[in-house]
Image (cartoon, rainbow, N blue to C red; front, side, top):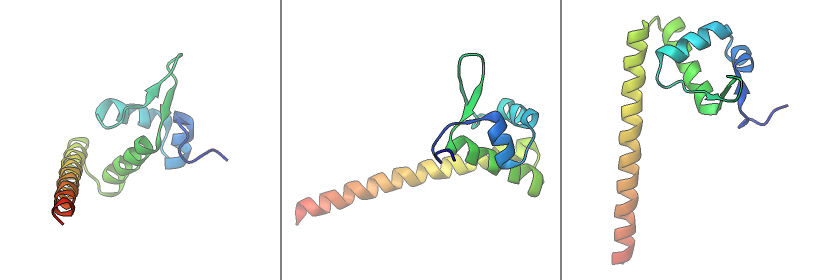
Amino acid sequence: MKDLDALRTIGEVSQIINVPVYVIRFWEKKFDSIKPIKRKGGNRYFDKKQISNLIIIKKLLHEDKYSIQGAKKVLMKNIFVEKEKQTLIKEIKQLINKLKDLY
């Protein structure tokens, strides 16, 4: 069995998320968050983050019935929120360190 952090081919990803290869290629063109690593010969390799993004896209399109534009908006909003969260965490850590220095 492959390591969970190993790169996966588009065929493996297709089986994992139960979506045809051509659909993954289509989503790759439509969604900026899907950026597989392309090696010599044009083979696509996906990491854990890419696979997670594909699962989210599948859910938004197939289960939640969003259009491609609607799914893009949801993804962009989630990316913005995640960046804001990371910024807040960084600021809180800095404040904690300052407080430690005071005492």
